[in-house]
Length: 504
Image (tube, rainbow, N blue to C red):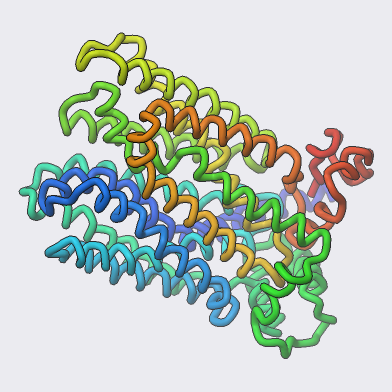
């Protein structure tokens, strides 16, 4: 083994780069979601002035994309089982391209809303397919990092949106916000070209009874031909195929019935974990902070429009930097420690943000205590940092890897649907919420919900670090109490259950 190590390392470097490149191209679609969120936070300031919209229309405009993303996400799983992961990414890009053009050419609120609806369907497809494709193309050793790529692409898109807001704000009012929204077409065009160079998911190919094509892809992303053969055998076994057999079952048929009507105990635990983690992600308040950060900064005492837009760029940079940090850590220290540490930072930040904004709100205009202003502004950044290093990327990584192969696409689709419902709920009600219970009270509420999320994740979501996708169902074969009573197996890491980590 020692003599072969140098050669393996050389091959591993090349193969891993290929897998990473495929995942990056597949994740470009997520930039669209991020760009739309980031650019809309600033564009709403100009839309309100140009189209004379009220607060209710602004909330609908902010949230309608997520309502329509629900439609996209609910259909994307079945579509990807039918036409493949790669073609589903391409379809998402074309849909978002159409929506971006429609928004950029909008002459009134109704046309703008229609463009947001079309783009929302594309976003639903993108959020479902990007992490699934990355999970299915990656090896266990780097899967956590690659399935987190869609989240960093979302953050990069948000940052681009903030930067576009700052520079395009200098254009005449009639052109500025339309250009901001229309530029979302550019990543779609880039993806339409890049997708041509991507291989199909080997796991999808196996499900179609095309094992030789799957083996060809695996030999490109694995370290050795022997490893490719082993992974193919594992995939075929997990898919329920005997060696050399082909499937005659329609793709995706009976999946929802298996998940929701007749689930086995492991599948039921997987559903609770995968859907629950999506349910709690946006209850942390991230959408309120990212989408309405200009209003939060204004409430904290930042006065001019340019200062507000510059501060939002800082939020985007913070989000991107800390998600990149998470990608470096997730396969080293595991999902659970990173996620729970992230929630601890979120709870502390939201509590301090609520305190600072409450003091500012109860002070005379422009006479708030300096410490309260500094606290409110600082904790916006610490909140974004805390979210981005754990809850943000791990939600997508964890939920895309826990499902068995036969359930993965449609299970991920349902998870994205729940994610979009929660996102839409927060984005469409935040202004009404903070007017009802004050802006400080809104963030105290989010802090309390984050505490509930921490309890849920601790008890319901076991560690998956280092496990092959085909082995993860075994992790959920026993409940939390059983895992607590058991000692780690000889193949387990030396940490106690439930934080035990299987070594690859």
